[in-house]
Amino acid sequence: MALTSALYTGLSGLNVNQTRLNVVGNNIANVNTVAFKSSRAIFKPQFYVTDGGGSPPSADFGGTNPSQRGLGATVAGIEKNFQAGSIEPTGKPNDLAIDGAGFFIVQGDEQRFTRDGGFNLNAANQLTTTGGEFVLGYGVDANYNLIPGQLQNLEIPLGATTTAKSTAGMTLEGNLNASGEVATGASILNSQALTDLSGGAPAAPTGASLLADVVDFANQGAPLFTVGQKFALSAEKGGRDVPEATYEVTATSTLQDMMDFFRESLGINTGVTAVPPPGATLETLAADDPASARLTLTGNVGVDNELSVAATGFSTAGGLAPFNFDQGSNAAGIESGAVGESVHTTVVGYDSLGTPLSIGLTAVFESSSDAGNVWRYFAESADSVGGDPVVGTGTLTFDSTGKLAPMPAETITLNRTGTGAKTPLVIRLDFDNLTSLTARGSDLVMTHQDGSPIGTLTTYSIGTDGKIVGSFSNGLTRNLGQLALAQFTNPQGLVDKGGNMFIEGASSGTPVISVPNSLGAGTVRSGALEMSNVDLSEEFINLIIASTGFSAASRVITTSDQLITELLNAAR
Image (cartoon, rainbow, N blue to C red):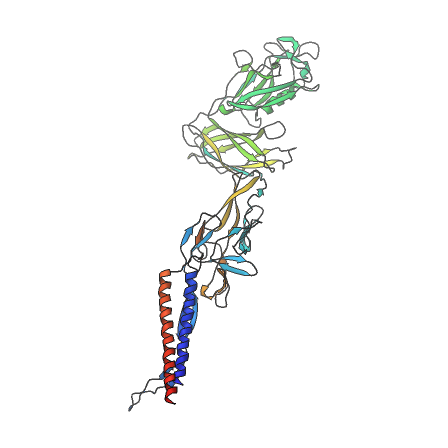
């Protein structure tokens, strides 16, 4: 009976060492498998036969220990080693490695977990494993805001287009020179003397005078306007070219219509209290002749608001100049110029169709006191429909330390009627980071605006926090989603389904799902893969130990067989 038991004891040794050989062989076979986790076989003794239970000591006897015979070994378990492998760069953006704890979450026939981040994009631009399972994470809404809490397939829609977004706000920054000269005076452009011949005799023209009746007072035989004529206005403002404007004379066109045309085309803001008042007016020249008057254009204060119209700046293609805004020393021309510290910048916003809109912003030093400085901004845009480019104005009050005092939200309004875009377009101006300190000059720049034209997703990147950020051809970057990671209280309890995939096991605990770099989860490395954690030197040693153990167990069987043979021979 004892010899037979020895045979089974040796057999158990063969079985456990064979299991170890299988485990070691599997480890060595997967030494180059991405994110492979090695295993080890753990042995324990099988049950024992107790020949004597032992006895306790007494006054007359020292007691005995139990007498037990073991019946071999058995496999206590095969454990996974979830220690992280080394991370190697690949350069492929959708190759991902987890640096730390956690598992990627994938979905096929069932929800599974993996450390293998060798992902691909399928035909629908969805992130998948090499086996076709969908990689899960958090998606985004229509405004590219992440939607946490609900796992879904991650999509990277390369080639997809974004919808245009109208500009709702702009941020302006810079410094307005506190030691500059306060703006005084304004550009005053005077025309030649005009008269109205509608009554048969010369009379001082009024705003109601028809253009066809208005002539040059000094040359009453030549009409200035005829019905059907088209005139082009070329001018400068602060040294910048004003967008060319055209005017067509009709049978009902009045001198007031012409004055409104000049005021709107030159962007003169009449909503500002100043001396002299800005705008377009008729000045009666009673001192020279009560039958004459001249057109006076008064601009806004500040050097960057200075107006300039050449002698032929308002003319037909043939060169006719009805109004002679000559800048010489004669009665027509600039009577006084704009002076004072100012700064101009041009910014670009977008309407709801993604159409770029150019907006000019001019800041002018309006007043100074012991309490601080006051600046005024002027906003104008030729892209505001309706002919009048003036889209807003307001004051910026700074305290004695150069900081902007709290103020209500400043807005400008652009008319987009007839363009198909949403109208009006209201844009909030944020001046909070603007200062007014002594400097060599004034600076004003736009640092941010939240509108955009239509764009195409061209590239993407995945950050350490798992956020997938897309770059569009219009220069925008938007969130496209975020990877999710799962952690387990006992990763050893996961069930290996092969193919580097695990499922939740009875003793693994439920998955704790979070984003990378939170709640103890590791970070994500894009363009890299986690390598196998197999240690070849250790596996070769285990191979030798398993081989030796197998050979030794087989020797037990051989020896037991020889003894049984001897016993049988003795009975003959």
